[in-house]
Image 1 (tube, rainbow, N blue to C red):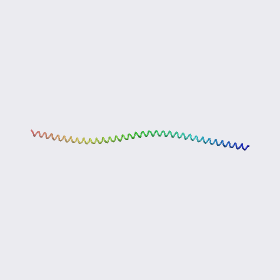
Image 2: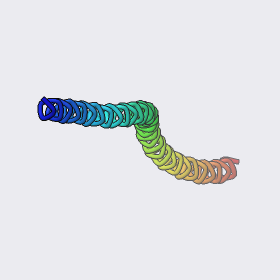
Image 3: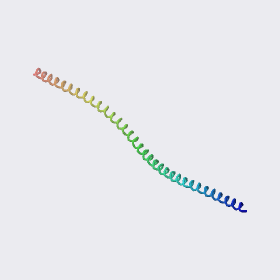
Image 4: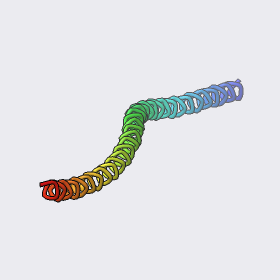
Amino acid sequence: MGRNNQLRTLFRAFIKWKKETRDYEQYLLLQQLDRTNIMIQDLMAHVNKLEGIHTNLLQENEELRQAALDGIEIAKAVQDLTREREQLSQDLQERASTIKRLIEDNNTLAFRLTVAQKEAE
Protein backbone atom coordinates (compact mmCIF):
# COMPACT_ATOMS: atom_id res chain seq x y z
CA MET A 1 0.00 0.00 0.00
CA GLY A 2 2.86 2.37 0.78
CA ARG A 3 4.28 1.50 -2.59
CA ASN A 4 0.94 2.24 -4.23
CA ASN A 5 0.74 5.58 -2.40
CA GLN A 6 4.26 6.39 -3.52
CA LEU A 7 3.45 5.47 -7.15
CA ARG A 8 0.18 7.42 -7.03
CA THR A 9 2.00 10.48 -5.63
CA LEU A 10 4.71 10.08 -8.28
CA PHE A 11 2.09 9.85 -11.05
CA ARG A 12 0.22 12.85 -9.67
CA ALA A 13 3.47 14.83 -9.55
CA PHE A 14 4.29 13.70 -13.10
CA ILE A 15 0.81 14.64 -14.37
CA LYS A 16 1.06 18.00 -12.56
CA TRP A 17 4.52 18.58 -14.08
CA LYS A 18 3.20 17.69 -17.58
CA LYS A 19 0.24 20.06 -17.11
CA GLU A 20 2.54 22.88 -15.90
CA THR A 21 4.89 22.27 -18.84
CA ARG A 22 1.99 22.29 -21.30
CA ASP A 23 0.56 25.45 -19.70
CA TYR A 24 3.96 27.17 -19.86
CA GLU A 25 4.35 26.20 -23.53
CA GLN A 26 0.88 27.59 -24.23
CA TYR A 27 1.84 30.78 -22.37
CA LEU A 28 4.99 31.12 -24.52
CA LEU A 29 2.98 30.49 -27.68
CA LEU A 30 0.42 33.12 -26.64
CA GLN A 31 3.22 35.62 -26.04
CA GLN A 32 4.68 34.84 -29.45
CA LEU A 33 1.22 35.21 -30.98
CA ASP A 34 0.81 38.60 -29.30
CA ARG A 35 4.21 39.73 -30.62
CA THR A 36 3.26 38.48 -34.08
CA ASN A 37 -0.06 40.37 -33.93
CA ILE A 38 1.79 43.54 -32.94
CA MET A 39 4.20 43.05 -35.83
CA ILE A 40 1.28 42.52 -38.21
CA GLN A 41 -0.38 45.72 -36.96
CA ASP A 42 2.89 47.63 -37.41
CA LEU A 43 3.26 46.22 -40.91
CA MET A 44 -0.32 47.16 -41.76
CA ALA A 45 0.32 50.72 -40.53
CA HIS A 46 3.47 50.83 -42.65
CA VAL A 47 1.60 49.48 -45.68
CA ASN A 48 -1.09 52.15 -45.20
CA LYS A 49 1.62 54.81 -45.00
CA LEU A 50 3.23 53.46 -48.18
CA GLU A 51 -0.15 53.43 -49.93
CA GLY A 52 -0.60 57.09 -48.98
CA ILE A 53 2.83 57.89 -50.38
CA HIS A 54 2.00 55.89 -53.49
CA THR A 55 -1.24 57.83 -53.97
CA ASN A 56 0.62 61.14 -53.59
CA LEU A 57 3.25 60.02 -56.07
CA LEU A 58 0.56 59.01 -58.55
CA GLN A 59 -1.01 62.46 -58.27
CA GLU A 60 2.35 64.20 -58.67
CA ASN A 61 3.18 61.96 -61.61
CA GLU A 62 -0.12 62.85 -63.29
CA GLU A 63 0.52 66.56 -62.70
CA LEU A 64 4.03 66.26 -64.13
CA ARG A 65 2.75 64.30 -67.11
CA GLN A 66 0.14 66.96 -67.78
CA ALA A 67 2.77 69.70 -67.40
CA ALA A 68 5.02 67.85 -69.85
CA LEU A 69 2.17 67.55 -72.35
CA ASP A 70 1.42 71.26 -71.92
CA GLY A 71 5.12 72.01 -72.43
CA ILE A 72 5.12 70.01 -75.67
CA GLU A 73 2.06 71.92 -76.89
CA ILE A 74 3.71 75.23 -75.98
CA ALA A 75 6.90 74.19 -77.79
CA LYS A 76 4.87 73.34 -80.90
CA ALA A 77 3.10 76.70 -80.72
CA VAL A 78 6.46 78.49 -80.36
CA GLN A 79 7.81 76.63 -83.38
CA ASP A 80 4.74 77.59 -85.41
CA LEU A 81 5.06 81.22 -84.33
CA THR A 82 8.77 81.21 -85.20
CA ARG A 83 7.99 79.86 -88.67
CA GLU A 84 5.30 82.48 -89.14
CA ARG A 85 7.67 85.23 -87.97
CA GLU A 86 10.33 84.06 -90.44
CA GLN A 87 7.75 84.01 -93.20
CA LEU A 88 6.58 87.51 -92.25
CA SER A 89 10.20 88.72 -92.17
CA GLN A 90 10.71 87.38 -95.70
CA ASP A 91 7.47 89.03 -96.83
CA LEU A 92 8.57 92.33 -95.28
CA GLN A 93 11.95 92.11 -97.03
CA GLU A 94 10.24 91.43 -100.33
CA ARG A 95 7.86 94.35 -99.80
CA ALA A 96 10.72 96.63 -98.75
CA SER A 97 12.64 95.78 -101.91
CA THR A 98 9.46 96.29 -103.95
CA ILE A 99 8.90 99.69 -102.30
CA LYS A 100 12.54 100.66 -103.02
CA ARG A 101 12.15 99.62 -106.64
CA LEU A 102 8.88 101.55 -106.89
CA ILE A 103 10.51 104.66 -105.36
CA GLU A 104 13.39 104.36 -107.82
CA ASP A 105 10.94 103.91 -110.70
CA ASN A 106 8.94 106.89 -109.41
CA ASN A 107 12.10 109.02 -109.25
CA THR A 108 13.07 107.91 -112.76
CA LEU A 109 9.59 108.70 -114.06
CA ALA A 110 9.59 112.07 -112.26
CA PHE A 111 12.95 112.89 -113.85
CA ARG A 112 11.68 111.85 -117.29
CA LEU A 113 8.53 113.89 -116.72
CA THR A 114 10.64 116.93 -115.83
CA VAL A 115 12.84 116.38 -118.89
CA ALA A 116 9.80 115.87 -121.09
CA GLN A 117 8.17 119.04 -119.75
CA LYS A 118 11.35 121.06 -120.41
CA GLU A 119 11.53 119.69 -123.91
CA ALA A 120 7.86 120.47 -124.45
CA GLU A 121 8.37 124.12 -123.55
